[in-house]
Image 1 (tube, rainbow, N blue to C red):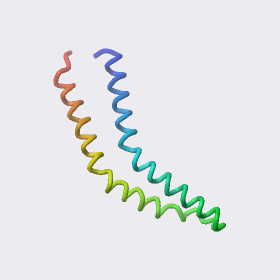
Image 2: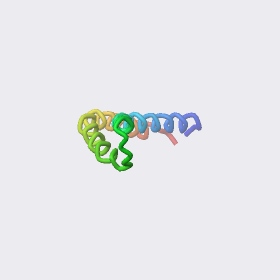
Image 3: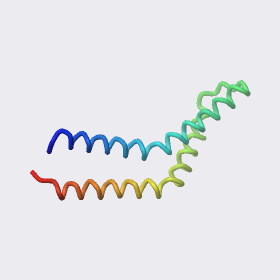
Image 4: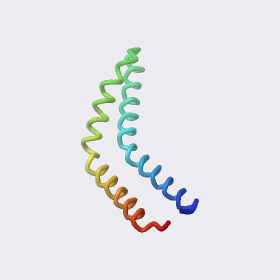
Length: 89
Protein backbone atom coordinates (compact mmCIF):
# COMPACT_ATOMS: atom_id res chain seq x y z
CA UNK A 1 0.00 0.00 0.00
CA UNK A 2 1.61 3.22 -1.16
CA UNK A 3 1.38 6.59 0.60
CA UNK A 4 -0.48 8.01 -2.42
CA UNK A 5 -3.11 5.30 -2.08
CA UNK A 6 -3.55 6.02 1.62
CA UNK A 7 -3.92 9.73 0.89
CA UNK A 8 -6.47 8.99 -1.85
CA UNK A 9 -8.52 6.80 0.50
CA UNK A 10 -8.35 9.41 3.27
CA UNK A 11 -9.38 12.18 0.88
CA UNK A 12 -12.28 10.15 -0.50
CA UNK A 13 -13.44 9.26 3.03
CA UNK A 14 -13.28 12.89 4.11
CA UNK A 15 -15.24 14.01 1.04
CA UNK A 16 -17.88 11.38 1.72
CA UNK A 17 -18.21 12.49 5.33
CA UNK A 18 -18.62 16.12 4.30
CA UNK A 19 -21.18 15.30 1.62
CA UNK A 20 -23.25 13.18 3.99
CA UNK A 21 -23.20 15.79 6.76
CA UNK A 22 -23.78 18.82 4.51
CA UNK A 23 -27.60 18.66 4.13
CA UNK A 24 -28.14 18.40 7.88
CA UNK A 25 -25.63 21.13 8.69
CA UNK A 26 -27.04 23.47 6.05
CA UNK A 27 -30.59 22.96 7.35
CA UNK A 28 -29.43 23.72 10.89
CA UNK A 29 -27.50 26.77 9.71
CA UNK A 30 -30.43 28.20 7.76
CA UNK A 31 -32.90 27.71 10.62
CA UNK A 32 -30.42 29.19 13.09
CA UNK A 33 -29.96 32.23 10.87
CA UNK A 34 -33.71 32.72 10.45
CA UNK A 35 -34.28 32.47 14.20
CA UNK A 36 -31.40 34.87 14.89
CA UNK A 37 -32.91 37.44 12.52
CA UNK A 38 -36.32 36.92 14.15
CA UNK A 39 -34.80 37.44 17.59
CA UNK A 40 -33.01 40.58 16.44
CA UNK A 41 -36.16 42.03 14.89
CA UNK A 42 -38.38 41.29 17.89
CA UNK A 43 -35.71 41.99 20.56
CA UNK A 44 -36.23 38.57 22.11
CA UNK A 45 -33.03 37.58 23.89
CA UNK A 46 -33.79 33.95 24.66
CA UNK A 47 -30.76 31.75 24.00
CA UNK A 48 -32.68 28.48 24.04
CA UNK A 49 -35.27 29.54 21.45
CA UNK A 50 -33.29 28.15 18.50
CA UNK A 51 -32.78 24.60 19.81
CA UNK A 52 -36.21 23.08 19.15
CA UNK A 53 -36.59 24.46 15.59
CA UNK A 54 -33.05 23.32 14.74
CA UNK A 55 -33.80 19.81 15.97
CA UNK A 56 -37.02 19.73 13.94
CA UNK A 57 -35.22 21.07 10.84
CA UNK A 58 -32.47 18.47 11.14
CA UNK A 59 -35.02 15.68 11.54
CA UNK A 60 -36.97 16.89 8.47
CA UNK A 61 -33.72 17.15 6.50
CA UNK A 62 -32.83 13.63 7.62
CA UNK A 63 -36.18 12.31 6.41
CA UNK A 64 -35.85 14.10 3.07
CA UNK A 65 -32.19 13.27 2.38
CA UNK A 66 -32.02 9.80 3.98
CA UNK A 67 -32.57 7.82 0.74
CA UNK A 68 -29.81 9.77 -1.02
CA UNK A 69 -27.50 9.46 1.99
CA UNK A 70 -28.01 5.69 2.19
CA UNK A 71 -27.44 5.24 -1.54
CA UNK A 72 -24.27 7.33 -1.43
CA UNK A 73 -22.96 5.51 1.64
CA UNK A 74 -23.79 2.09 0.16
CA UNK A 75 -21.96 2.96 -3.06
CA UNK A 76 -18.96 4.18 -1.08
CA UNK A 77 -18.94 1.03 1.05
CA UNK A 78 -19.12 -1.19 -2.05
CA UNK A 79 -16.28 0.81 -3.60
CA UNK A 80 -14.10 0.32 -0.50
CA UNK A 81 -14.91 -3.41 -0.29
CA UNK A 82 -14.12 -3.95 -3.96
CA UNK A 83 -10.88 -2.05 -3.48
CA UNK A 84 -9.94 -4.25 -0.52
CA UNK A 85 -10.71 -7.36 -2.56
CA UNK A 86 -8.40 -6.28 -5.37
CA UNK A 87 -5.60 -4.97 -3.14
CA UNK A 88 -2.31 -6.83 -3.18
CA UNK A 89 0.06 -7.18 -0.28
